[in-house]
Image 1 (tube, rainbow, N blue to C red):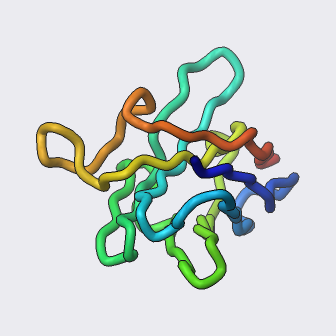
Image 2: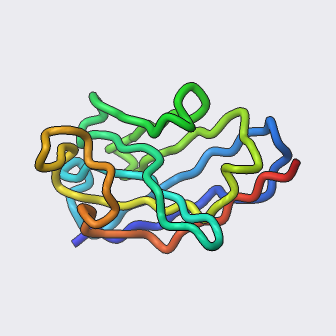
Image 3: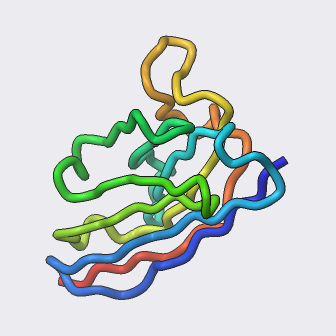
Length: 129
């Protein structure tokens, strides 16, 4: 069983950048695909990005393409989410989550929260206008 801890959130002005980290322990990190999700107040949790176990594949929701970059360092048991050109609508609690496969049953990248087995506690990102 893997435990996940997010960090790196904070308050930033629109147009600024933040780098989130998701540190894992308690399991073989390279056996897990890692996804990032976010949840704004009053809204459902939504998919942001996912990276495969060895980092060769990644996928993003349309609203963050070209602004966010997901990466991983398996030697450090950490996944990163570099967020640039932040917008007020990016404000949310950001969660990382783990599952054994990058792909879902339909053979596409896993983008549904219910498909993930392990979750971190979240880190708040607030973007001011």
